[in-house]
Image (tube, rainbow, N blue to C red; front, top):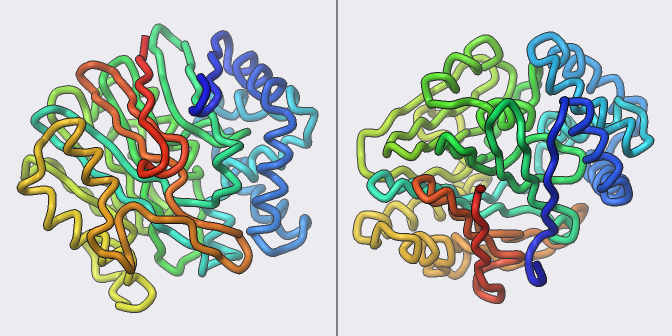
Length: 340
């Protein structure tokens, strides 16, 4: 659809899904890899050395998803290690680029079952990311993801949705990569199953998953490398940005100024915000704090280029509707897409 991200559908075995993904997105995968190589700021030898443990753990715990990753490599005609590197891009960034921007805002309204976030990252990715539909084991998944990456922000036909906020601990990452685990969430049929599936692989990463369902439940999981802080629904809403809410890990007022400002502003707005799709749109578009707004205009980063709100994504988990903008919601309309 014009004015929105391209959309592709995949089905079949994990290898077949991966192969078609790699074949269709071949050139964009190369561009994404070029972008991340620039961003990681280290040579190929170091990247491939770091990615090896992520490949081993993914194959061990989720062999079907490993087959999909390796299918992408075959379809894109690339060394499989580079596709594992893309799927481990968050962990590699944490190791080689500790000052990389982390500027996402996520929220969940429990009563209308609406889960949403601004994905704030490089403007360069705006022309690379795509909407991916997957039909697998009787389940449908709709997610926004990056070329070559098997999991990101999305929802499934069981009414499970997930959003991502990057967090920092200053510790070396290991284990199954965040973006693989996002796909694990989207292949789960309930929040209970999410917890069961993540339990053996919950350590070794730094991110928050905000998971909501169509019954009005949510689960916030703050991965802190060697610990996981979790919270279930206690209020009718949840907001998360890019600092730990249940741990004193991130308290530097300068380093985390944007995260604190966005969290405080969202927390101030949400109690009186209409709990509707429009209310969520207004929240994600807010620029009440002009210096550090929730909706971020593109600003220059020395190495990454322009960084800001690449998209706003709102998921109605009851209706299985996704409302999404290509670019920030001030200059670009929301498009509604249905999870069939």
